[in-house]
Image 1: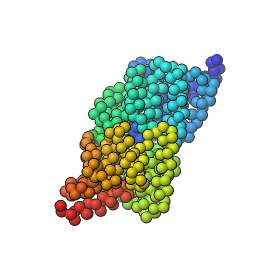
Image 2: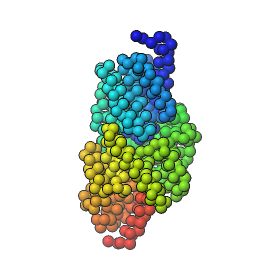
Image 3: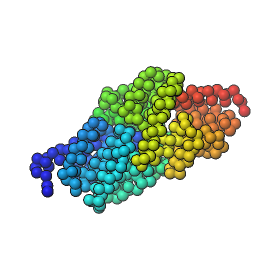
Image 4: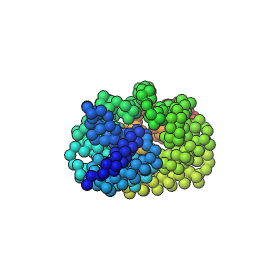
Length: 455
């Protein structure tokens, strides 16, 4: 039975509020976790397709608003269980809730909601397919994400979430030429901040940091909401930090936090910039706030390394122990966690486990990040000759990352390649002299050793 007029009005308000909230989202966090339902426009061309399918971005929504929207949508679906669009929106919202809270137990619920949407409407349901793509990406199953995004785009070539996740999946599969082509194609169909930021990241990966900055500046100029401004300013801050421009980075994070006070990616970035400048107290304050609300491996490890650098090994171990707990929970909920496990275990855990995890991740996807992780895991297991080709591959598309250069320099030094090691270590410190609370001092010590060895 249809809802009475007042019920229909409430349902419309709920869908509008959740869709607009989710439309504030597609880009705020890790690149690969974009996705989204719900923005209406005019009724012709791409905007009409978007309106029909509930296609919109989904990352910048405050967790409280998202929880309220989910609760309202659950109530609606109890009354209207055959609403396939509602199930698609709910599934996408669960994916976003898992991402923003760091709680992977929402992923099975997202999977069930999206599957139910497709059972009700198996044909032409690009919203649910795009939701499945976002879910697969969130679980680090990028081949499935790419396949689902392609299916969604065959139904609706303008589905913004599918366009974005397709770029993300190609990036995370190491297919950088295809990712650039996909980002440029998306820019012709749905130009806007979700696409601009992905295009910028692909250019950065290909060694064009200046081009990435130009695209992000274009994105910031187009920002029309506080959420957009916060996201893009944070991306500019991260790019500046990676190039060692800490004052510029702090300025961008300040812009983000003026637009959206408490915006966690900006708080995290500010903490990293403070750490790079040697302001450990402020860095710890910011990173502790991030992991309190967003306890994911990279942030926990960063805080742990800050404690290590401060001579507090006990507090550092607490952070690394939480990483292990999160990895176990995520794996139980279908998330591929081997890259996270490899990175933490190589420096703070079991070297053999680091190598097992890195090999498993390399078998799934061959990216600059997995190449670096495998190189470093081989190094900590004393297998530097095997490690060097992977370390070299971590910069294959032209990407310049100070941590990767540091790892390569250490591996080269271990192989007696002192001139090459000096060049790699010096390049790391020249690019981003504060790239890690523990890695940067280690890089300086390693460089000093190579300078004392003229061989």
